[in-house]
Length: 227
Image (cartoon, rainbow, N blue to C red; front, side, top):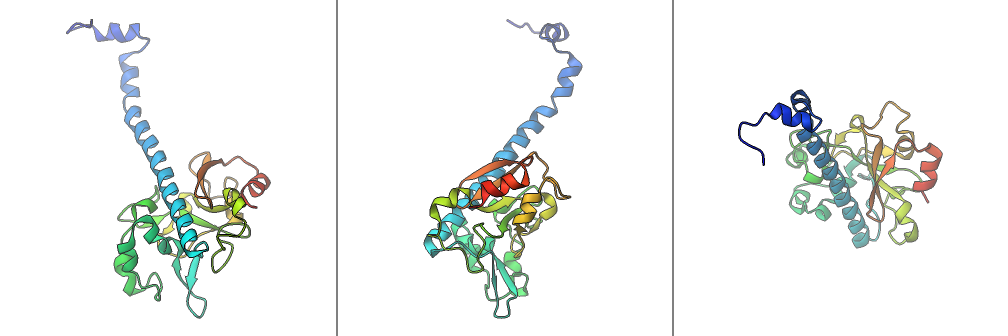
């Protein structure tokens, strides 16, 4: 049994450690736990969003459009706004005038609120930006202006990309109708917009989320993640 007043230097040395080594390791312990917590939270955010997109598709018969437009084709609102009821933000959704642009004065109150599951390393409650972006392009869940029909190619949903957690450089206001293209996704890791990790979180049309190695060749990623 350890005694009060024991020589801790001798004890640590017997364990193959030094006092200096413990002091060097100590700051890294909480930071490592915090980094692991953030990593888990980001995946939980992705899963909540993926499920919300899937539920929207089930109830509306098609996936949400990447953005809505007015009669002149001007972009109004993002898919992230359209799925607010599915992520439990019905009250916030009711505050938004969908007939006015996302950045119109009528939508100022909603614009300054950031749904919890849209928070990312790129922003916080005071900086309402997100890096959860739809992937736009042929073969993705968002390849139709009006939203891709839910019943179409259902067996392939497990390999159909819907959205990703992009790098910080791609951060956009959560209400803005701004996303990423399939080509931008495929070039990640070889472009200026390089993720902070060696993997990328990807959400699929069947509501599952997985980490994709950035090192995968562009051609392989295209074959693997589009029908």
